[in-house]
Image (cartoon, rainbow, N blue to C red):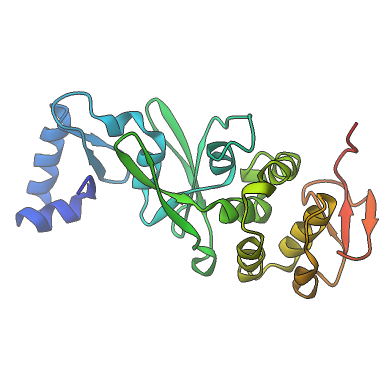
Length: 234
């Protein structure tokens, strides 16, 4: 167990809650444990522990189950040079900011039916849950405000296309159950000269803004019912 909470520790060592709290406090005070948040701890050993230098590992231990996604995943896969100041973590329980010095995290709550499509990634000797490439794109289209905005998402999709499984990408988009998301994906795929025809039936029946936070004006695309309200390139 590399991370645990007070209740788990008490059960493991057959301690009363008050006893467990005192022991954990003592272990943290001598550096054997690092307290994350909400009574959660990560084992730090008696010296510098590799996990304490891994923000993706720490972020996914703040709440479990969870996985790294959105802007953090886009940057992890090399699809955007812009590195977010926060580590974005998808989960089904919490929506808030957290800090574990020197790192800052944004916990993004998503419905359980949309919590899928992640795998274990590794950096050095540390493993952590990471969105699959296709799910990173889908999550970012679902909540682009957590991925640097739609301009960043659109650019990242263009960079990612050669490495994506387009069938899986489409299936994941449809599985999210959000017609506006499917419409935006279909439009962006066709704009990048990628096949997207199979998504049309699951797309939106009414016009949606490509950038949900942008104005309701721009270039209207009748096939995908998308208003391209992003600034024109060039």
